[in-house]
Amino acid sequence: MAVPDNLKKGTLLRFRGEVFYVYDYYEAKAAQRKVVLHVKLKNVRTHQTIEVASDMLGKIETVEHSNRIMQYLYASGKELVFMDQRTFDQVSMDADQLKNELPFLAPERDYRIFFLGQQPVMLDLPPVVALKVADTAPPQRGVGQSNVLKDAKLESGLTVKVPLFIKTGDVVRVDVATREYVGKE
Image (spheres, rainbow, N blue to C red):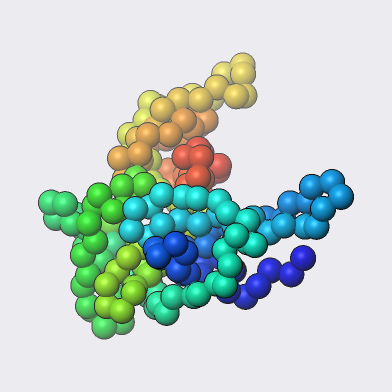
């Protein structure tokens, strides 16, 4: 089944009066039935995720939006401040709005931000982010088991389980969906 252009990942669309971000889709086929496209949507206002079959969406109305790559600068109270490196414009986003993304944000890193008009509505993280280890136990080598893990606190404040050979200052890759270590940079 061909995926309609207006259901591609990264599209903003209006559904039930709200604006949603298409972040995933897959095809499912039940026995003796046609293939149905299932779409995973994230509400840009509430950040609630839902999954619907594409035939339930009805006529799809895409929402005009823009996105810009912006650098995360700092947190100021309940606001997170980002800057466009080309124009030096700064925008603030509510920390509560980004509570799921906050553990993966590191200062002076670039992130894609979606805008409706001039209003920033959503931050899009890559599937895997690289973060520096801020604190962990000293590395251990030669331990008998290869699947032994230890806690590591990352520069963003997130704590993940990492292999014993990881040391403070290393850069590790973390899966955003599972919040698990996936490799070393």
